Image (cartoon, rainbow, N blue to C red; front, side, top):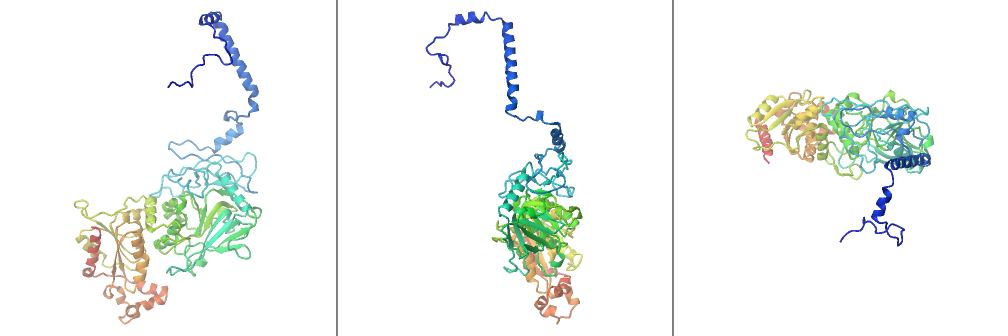
Length: 585
């Protein structure tokens, strides 16, 4: 069928029954029009149309950047980033002054590009829609395993109107305005909310769990006052009679540690008017935690900080601002690759004098960190509603540190290939005194053996562990490095004398199994411990070591935790062979 959609009508519109002029008559008419006169007529018609457009243009107020004022153009140029030969993520837009809350001081925040891999969480449910593309300071960018160095942009334009402006952080375009307005509106409508997890000791965990509070609404953090304000007209949420909730945000609650942890007060206020004015606005949630306690020990760095951080904030996909009290610069530097994977933004030192009267405002946040047992993650409706496992944490580490191996070598996979064993040595207590003989015995069985002591360079040692198929160590913090092993690699723990089975299993054995590692353990006998040179055989350490455990940690620390071991190679050889066999499965 022939379409008639664009066919020409046989009659002129509105022509009724009139006939078309004959072609010969039309040619005779047009031939009388001189070309010169036709050109003049066309020019006159164009001029008339242009004058009509100009006279009516103001009625429609069509904005064009060509006619923008010189002042506005200058401001726009100042907030625009300089050209760079490297590709980058979309730049942040100039952010107008905010009027959602009274007060606020300071200039605009400096816009900085994030690495392309960092802005991955903009689609996360519950977060502001705008792509988050700001970063305030490049920290430790030359650390091994870090993303490409961040590029700082020049200062944003000064406020030409003379009015004070608030800094906008963690946002692109007008996201800060939207997030701040939403937070303020939530507070004004009584939507401010705080829920706290105060479960204490449960599920066989021998230590008191930390208190963790989750907040949403209009949240204002004042480092100087060590306070978090929640605009909460209803006053609900577990506050005391004065409208406060005090907590020490360290992810462990040992009583003797708590005095060394900065106390943070969450204050419920009835309206935004009585809360301190925002000076910096963030469009992402906050996580405020402490670096006090045992965070100078690799085991506790993981169990009391990094795993709780992962449990609390991994679901935010980097779109979270970390604030650290009891701040240790060396600790932040040491774990920069992992912190960068948790948060796309530089850590804020909660204790810094440079904070002055700054007030950081957020749409939601956490005070404290959720934690499970040591190196163990189990499903839990409050602490772990997303059912993260230690295998998930292993994957997180591999991504953060660019560790290449997720599976160990299999025997026979490559002709002449020897499985790699890493023996972690110790310089303090619980040394393996015949380490050289153990290494030689392992090499005799076919292992390619490396002996190393864990150092402060986390990315470098993590890469060394990830390259191994078998990790062997005496019970101690060094075994924590099993978190870097490829899945289904082998872990061999030498368990010292003194009824150490509970500690060996719960601190390293069960975690190894939860990480889907193949776990072996070797229990030291009386003749293999240096305790035989310190105590007579009728001493409690030999007759009833369980009684020592009942006397508390200090007694253990002075006895069984200070021993060294010399393994019987004949007795130990089957354990080495079992490690080899596990690589054949």
